[in-house]
Length: 243
Image 1 (tube, rainbow, N blue to C red):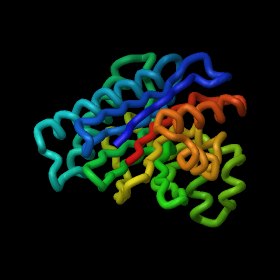
Image 2 (image 1 turned 90 degrees about the vertical axis):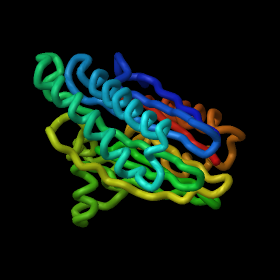
Image 3 (image 1 turned 45 degrees about the vertical axis):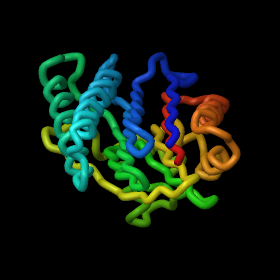
Image 4 (image 1 turned 180 degrees about the vertical axis):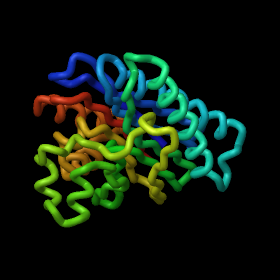
């Protein structure tokens, strides 16, 4: 198993409010996550970094104590509760942090099985057998419009409301995430990213990067470079796991 991640503030933004984390306990166990913060001043950065720190700490403790066997979702749900509570409480007590929150997409990989969790519009993609599919479903205004048939998938890419999310870590006292199971075969890749990447790079280009690059780090580097070449109006983060 091979892990790599890249993050950049992009061309337009003055600071990077994305956070990412990758961790490999052994060749058969890994954790990866990407957060995209929102809020005024530095609040977005606070929300994303605090979420990543608390969530990763909770999950790593569970992995080290072998609590995860048969209960990956429960472990991730508990870690999300802890992270959400930490961000929400800080938003209530610190004036500069009021209204802050963050998206989050995470995956815990155990041998050939990945459990993916998301809140907001940061995404997970699965590349297998020369094909790519989006694993997660965005919690966003435009995604709801696509599901209702109000707009097409292509129209959603340029819709003026494309950056409005309907769910975020730290904005409410109780939060639910969506969970997905992914079976990973030899040669497969799991790719997590913030919308700073998915808004600029197509699925076909993500697939090509995985198929053509020799290592996970090369995949992450190529995708980041593509987003930067297109002006990168937002922070860009990508994490790659290859079996």
